[in-house]
Length: 267
Image (spheres, rainbow, N blue to C red):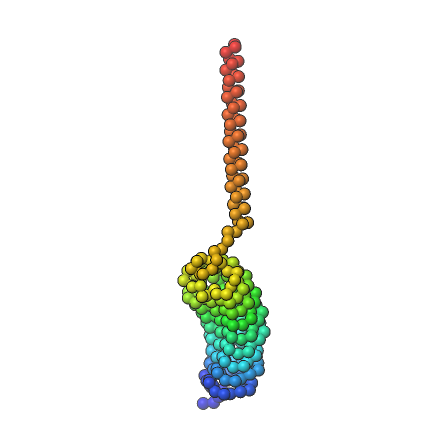
């Protein structure tokens, strides 16, 4: 058997150093590569995206600094595990091309920027983690399209804004963690959120919810209250005007009838 026929490559838990082995890009039948727990460094080469047979890529616990956007173009990609490296930069919009992926783990890196809304294109995704990075911005509402999502870990980042209500529709989600961020607003209560505990939301000073979440109650929206009061006032005033008009019309009719009766009596 030649190297060209190799389908699985395991080089795990060694002390291998240096750059990513370029010869991997020449293995046209490779379906799985595992280099985890080594000391590889430098960028992950873009040519890896040309190995169209790749389904599983495990490169965690190394010193890689860059992953190429070409990885998201692998049409058969199922699992991509790059946790615990030194990856920098932001997650590209091309992530939405990995429509067959069921696991993506980018946790414990140095990623920044925002999660692009194209994440909603990963319709097969079951597990997604970017925990322990410096990602900012809002949580994309398009996460609500990932109906097979079981686990979502966004903890220890700089996310801000609200937790999207669309996530209430993810009935398969049994693990959710947004602790240690800068989120604000009310925690959703429907769908899987009925089962999550307060540990999922720790260290978000702007969040509010029920006592079960060990958080302050959400204040009543004064704008909503004023609008409601305004509607009630308009209804009451309208009813009062209607009563006045009906009463006035009734008096006029009675006066007219009385005048007619008086005229008939005089003749």
